Length: 490
Ligand code: SF4
Image (tube, rainbow, N blue to C red; front, side, top):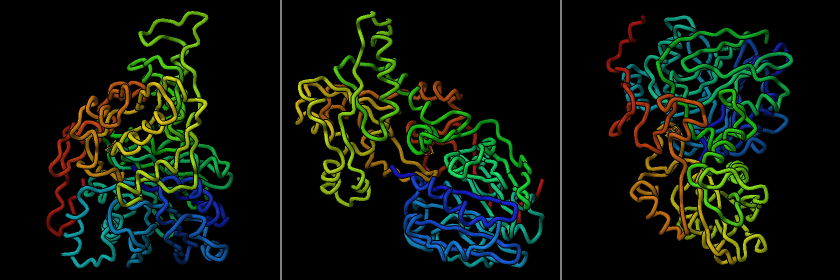
């Protein structure tokens, strides 16, 4: 699975925004490694620098010096919609009759093609096949007729899907979160201004304070002197659809989402995993780094109770927590290896077992997900080759049975091992002694959310958006964007 994108926006009192944006993008690098970009505005003109590659490679001193202005936005991207080339790298910038726009988008629209066709028929020329340009053109058109807040509201009334946006309209910086709040976006206060960012870790990097999450359906406008921000609740919906995988996998463990430290949420999911499917083994070990917080919570809970939920006797320490797998950080992620054979070799290069921790022991290995099953199969084999007597696999999330349409590059349905196999069949395929996933109810429970306030599409096959050919778990439908008329404002 691949993270999607990271967005950031800052408005400062006099100081140039480029360097704070650059540091914030570093903090969000885990959300996208394909391209990085910054757009700033100095009150007279817009400046842009967007490059393929990592943040550290995309900007030199001269590039940052040329990005003048105390207002700006930034973006790191892993492609989710549109081509894998520079035409889809962001922020997307455009100049039009009433000013200039820069847009950074995290998420994925499910009706972008309809809107693109409609705008193209009305004379808009597109330079990319990405959905961000669709939002930019729609907003630019609305800005010709409306003030900023009403223009954003109109665009929100037409686009359907997942979006957290940071936007520059000349030197005004905005943040928008889709009405179901699928992707995260938060507000922070800096010494001399305000920041919007996908994750609070970016705010920490700038020595700022997290103020709060941007609410689903909210537009936040940062004041130009860095003095504060204005909030407009433009759309309200009964239920949210937060991506639960942000907590499980994508977000940094040191980020705070919905007032909860991601690391703590993962530890609590691990505790729940023990109470649902704990198994007594000599050792519990994480798959580094993704399984570490789950394994630590699981082992903690295992030291307190037996798998039946009974308190441990005073002389019973439960299961030992150990780091039995060492990660080689310089090997590329398995998903970018184009062939199955290369992927399998990459797993072996990436993880090296510590024999003394494993040999002659029964082992529980904990990870956050099984996507294709390749890694788990290799891992179980690796542990058995090292002399493990039994290998039990526990996963801190429900089984992934369906693809994501909201901006996660997950795999096709055919590639997902759980899309057509039962847990017992997967256990046999990966050759584990036992396999268990966390239940969806447990996820909702730990995240203290009603199931209907979460997106669980990839683990239930029922989505919170109206997606062609897929089931929904709520009363939701796409807006009608047909014709060339702007929709009537309410
Ligand atoms: S389908 Fe899965 S990965 Fe995609 S937004 Fe929903 S919960 Fe997140």
